[in-house]
Every structure is written in C-alpha cells, then in structure tokens.
Image (cartoon, rainbow, N blue to C red; front, side):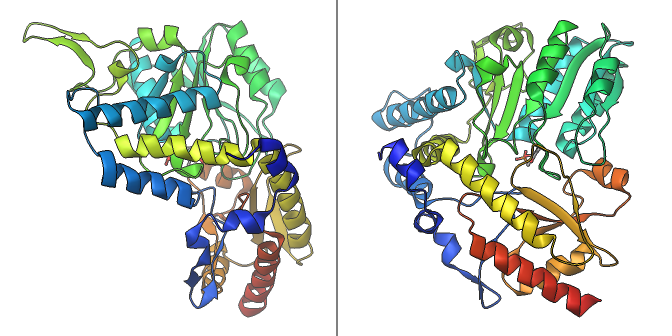
Length: 413
Ligand SMILES: *Cc1c(COP(=O)(O)O)cnc(C)c1O
C-alpha cells in the first residue's frame, strides 16, 4: 500500500479516475459526468476485483462450515468487520453489526426501542431528515404512544440549535439526526447534539449515510449511541451497511429478526439468543458485500480522508461560485459547514426538465425531493436539481455541468 502522506500531497483526480472503469463510458454519446454521488457512489476496480475473487475463489457460507472454503470466507468476513471497527474507531468488534444498509440499521433500532418507550415519552428528529430517518420513528411513535418532536431549521439549511436545547427535556428518550443532509449538504453539529441529549438521559442515533464518504467519524470520540452507514455511498457495493451500537444498548435491544445464526440454542419451548454481534445477524448475510465493504474502506483510506475532504471542499466551492454566475439560479442549503451537495433551481423552470436535458449531455444529476420531502415543503418547492460530488470528480466536469445548465436554461425559457 502506498504511503498516505505522499498520496495526500500528490492527490490527482485524473489518476484516481483510472481506478473507476465506469467513468470511461459514454452516455447518450457523451462522456459520462457522474454527479449523483449522494444517491450512490461508483465502484473502484480494487473493490470489483474483491467481489470477483470471492466468487471465483472462496464463495461459501460462513460461521458454520467445517471445510476450508467456509473458513476462508468466515475469516475474510470477520476481517472486514475489523476494518470497519478500525475505520470508525469503534471500541469492540461486537459493536459492529452488518446490515443491508442505513435503512435496515435504523429500522432495527426503531423496532427495538418499541419495548422501552411509553406514552408521554418523546423522540426527536431533525427537520432535514431522509425519509428513512423519519418514517421508522413515526411508526415507533404509533406503536408506543410516544410523541415525535422536530428540531427546526433556518433558511440557510442549518438546525436552530437554541430550539433544540429548548425542546430537550427529561421526556426525551431518543434523538435522531443525520450527520450530513443528503438534500442540502449541511454538516450538522452532532457533537453538540449528542452531548446535550446525554445530559437529559436520551440516546442518540446518527445517520452517517451521507457523511461517511466525506468525513471520517471517530465514534468513540463522538460518544454516540448508534451510527449507521451504507457501503454503497462510500465506494462499496449495494445491499450492505453497518450499524454501530454501544455494547450496553445492543445487549438491551431485542433481536430484530429471528432465524439461523442469531441463536444460541433452540427448542420448541424456548430459544436463547447468540452473543453480539450475531444476535442481530439472522440468516445468511451479504458475505461478499461485507468483504467488499472492507475493501472499499481500504481503498478510501489509501487515498486518505484528509486529502479527500480538502479536495472536495475546493471542488464544491468552485462549483458553487460557477453555478451562481447563472442568472436566476438559486442554491438551497447555504450552511456555513457543508459538503459535496449542491441543490438548486432556476426560477420558472421545473427541476425535472433541467435534469432531462443534462442527461442528454451525459451529465447525471438527481432531481426531485431526494427522499426529504419536509425540506422541500419548508422551501415551498416541488424539488431541486442536485449535483453531488466525489473525490473522483473534476473542475472540468463542473464546467460541463455549468455549461449544461446554461444550455438547459436557454432551451426552456
Ligand atoms: C442514502 C441515505 C439514506 C438511505 O440509505 P439506504 O442505503 O438507501 O438505506 C439515509 N439517510 C441519508 C442521509 C442518506 O443519504
């Protein structure tokens, strides 16, 4: 592996791009400009190789086989768990639960908390959540009679922290917030959110899905109770993710699904559950996906998160500046601390129409409400065009985006 410090100083997106075969393809006769990284990131050859090697070399079920292939697969899968543990600076490997992704992790916790909440308790979400971090909590409140409170935000797309502190009380049992908003790019002050929640005895779940590709979170330093991510937003495959939970919480929470692998002993009278992490990993998991998740972390760490963060900041600053030269263009989400997402509209033009013209030019952006309808309601808009960036994007691609938006504007006005 190459020394991190040399890479940081020689960070070169053009070299990095060679690791991503998909970036060579054409879309509608134009070179692909992929700016939908907030929906899913692209996959480097190193991760693709890991997947191919698994199926060509040691595909087997884990944790149960006496034979060599099963041992190899088990070792690789458990090694991936260790890599995740190290990457997020997690104290114990049994606090790392493999999931199918962020949504699965949130539902696991929300369902488990049903047995801890009662009428009169409060759970709090931020006003800028992804639907996957709203709906499970609404369902939890319906089941338990607890009340859902919302931390409001201002027009810049920042949480109003005074209001948060006012809303907190002895009644607050749980607080849920994303680390980075997928619709606005805001980096939320999660340190302050966690500390204040703990003062009133509430647990905190942070949705790190959007942050994980841009910011390396130190979960012990954060002292967070739960943190969830999806591998596919950080150069890994779809269908796999991580739920981190403090051991004390994971021990208390009931299992989410029953099945193989999660039991210690089964009789028709009574079943006892396996120890952590297996208690939450019923059935055959996404073995290859988990191993590839580990490879994705290796890949990103070989580039280095300092270099990634610095490069992306510069790219987003440049893109913001260039987009704002377009008449009538408005950016939603102008928080002081933000990363890698630019949501915008052009006055009088539907975002979908801009997105369609950009697609004809080979430029992939997302349009719509980005699974965050409450944010769109807040701004009284149907949706936005969202360009979201990764470390493999370039200034030339930003220029193509800006040209494309100008062209769309002249065609649609
Ligand atoms: C993508 C995303 C999710 C959902 O992730 P899945 O992989 O679809 O489960 C949740 N929250 C945020 C902030 C996201 O960006």
